[in-house]
Amino acid sequence: MLRAAITGIQGYVPDYILRNEELEQMVETNDEWIQTRTGIKERRILNQRGLGTSDMAVPAVNSLLEKKNISPSEIELVICATVTPDMQFPATANIISDKAGLKNAFGYDINAACCGFLYALTTAAKFIETGVHQKVLLVGADKMSSIIDYEDRATCVIFGDGAGAVLLEPDHEGNGIINSKLYSDGSGSTFLHQKAGGSVKPASHATVDAHEHYVYQDGRTVFKFAVNNMAEVAKQVMNESDLTPDNVHWLVPHQANKRIIEATYKQLNLNPDKVMVNIERYGNTTNATIPLCLWEWEDQINKGDNLILAAFGGGFTWGATYMRWSY
Ligand code: UT7
Image (cartoon, rainbow, N blue to C red):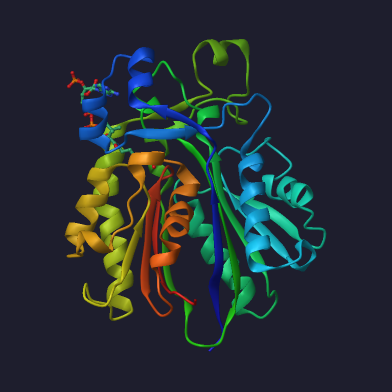
């Protein structure tokens, strides 16, 4: 059976480390509160002026192609999941293609907030499963620091910058993406959004003065939503695929809050050893959390391992994907 499988992965995080101690100097917060409530100790920030999301995606893409010994001209499609595109338009995928020399690829962006990587993965897989394309690049990348208000303690302690790139290719050995369940509910948009800069409220002096180009989040509501829905959709995917806690090798959860991750694996009856968690070092990098986990755990994942990827985010959006690792 023809399936789409991840055949390579690479991450990139900027060098600058923003530690909780530095945030204590910026807003009324403290290391103990941040660690207890979120599990985060530090996050990476792309702090050089004039650099954007594509500048993190491109090193990930270049290293991935080098690692796989693939010429840039072989890539047929690039999908970039991001909420912080380099510009409103054109798509950041096009900018990545240009900078990485992917001359034969078409590209577009997907915006599904923190669930974007799963939406993009599911979408990208269809181009492989239908036999239309053989080599598809998928990027999850966000420069969250470009839309975070470092005077708002409710959000600035959570987010960080980073990028991950994966290569999708056809698999005939029964590995690859087996099942995905994706959901969205636009009535949740009021709880997590960027108020201005879109067509409803274009940028103006007033929107800048009101800090409306930054992330707004009602944390408690989003927390409750996440705890209920991330586990529920993961359970649904597991049930449909006859997976039990025993034969799931890895849970790869979106890294938004350590307490949400813990609640999720407990509801799934999974052993914590099977759960990828790196939130303490990167915070919530939105579209990059899942690929950054896969990148860091790549050496520990074995061919044939059953992985459940699960995410939720602004929108609301949520979903889970079951894949069997191909290498
Ligand atoms: O991927 C995107 C999806 N987003 C998320 O997953 C975020 C989900 N939500 C969360 O992770 C949590 O709600 C937060 C980490 C954002 C907040 O944690 P919480 O335990 O829900 O705290 P809270 O908002 O209920 O606030 C508790 C208290 C409040 O003070 P009072 O009203 O009890 O006096 C806040 O003002 O903590 C205060 N507080 C802080 N204190 C120190 C809020 N932020 C901070 C802070 N430092 N950074």
